[in-house]
Length: 299
Image 1: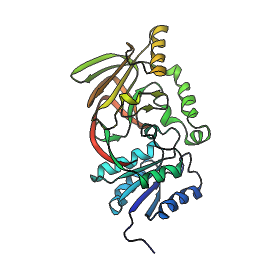
Image 2: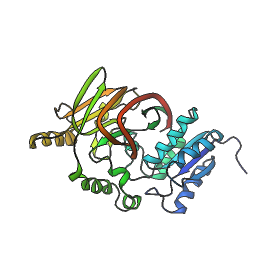
Image 3: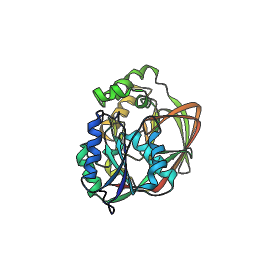
Image 4: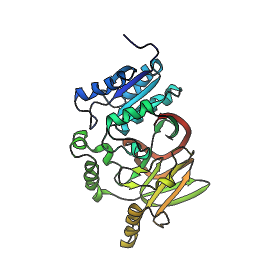
């Protein structure tokens, strides 16, 4: 018999996420919530973009949406919430390979522990990024070096060798890396140079490689973190970039690091981006802005 006064949750599971490749693990997640008095509407994603469709179709029939998968699945869930226009609370059980967003929130990568945190946690609001007015991102939009590895690495490789798969796939791109000449308008200033990497993020972890100081990043301050990495022309330039990556040295002439509510990028040639680990065509002009307090997350 159903518990009529229990909370209804839409549980969306990505069945090919690294930790959820067996049917039993999916149903165990659903049973965990049911045993704690929740009514569970269990759905599994079938293809890219399906999580967004599930939220739009079933979200309003539930009190909360719980996403069990990787950052890409969470991105689709939040995109659905944003399109609904209703602040349904979201719970995130990180079961992917890198889980940058979960790292920023200090969410456990143990499925059961993360589920209990959702049931016993508190609500907090989070800012969400918007790319060209039509695509939302939880933690990053980036272009340049290594950004393609996140969406080009086969899921089977990610599941087998985990985060190392991203790095290995990125290494293949090194001979093909070439700087992009970019003009960036931000905070009423212009930054223009040849850059090998650029990112607008709301996260302390980018691809599991770039780690930002937690004290320098606030996920709910109405600001995004902009990072631009110049193209190294000497061995010393390269050393300065490595110094930034290893020691978070923000006073670095090869790195531009600042906070902003929005930024506009002008590219000399059409440039692909990565939005929360997924491909985005981008183009020559890209406008990115923050939407403050857009999402309610259970943590």
